[in-house]
Image (cartoon, rainbow, N blue to C red):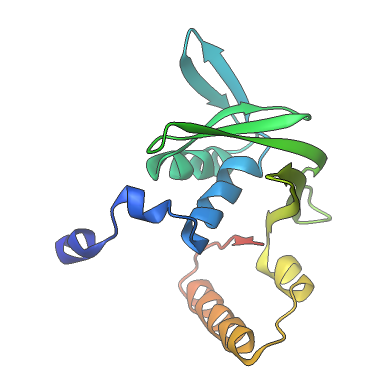
Length: 158
């Protein structure tokens, strides 16, 4: 375990525009957490402990949720000290029928759909066209199966 931690990338290396950054950005943006600001001290109110844990995970790698409303979501990159403002175009909260939460946002001139939820709901809606992405799909399903065999809960993001 010590060697794993020693070899792990530094926090600033995780936030370099990579897929890892996109993953943690999605966790910081795609949620219904209420942010309370008490003279610069932020606290969070979440509908579930899972959602709160996801926000705290994003914070651990340097993405702090600053504001979250139906109009915009603002996160702070703690390494660059830059704020990122996401205009919320639509939000679809998690429910037991959809088994996913989705947020359509506009950022940097692009419109993105961010989604997180059950693998049985998310993966069939993903398209794996290229040979590389088909291999990725096989790897994802293999890992999900292994997690299920161990009795672990999973969350898929897209």
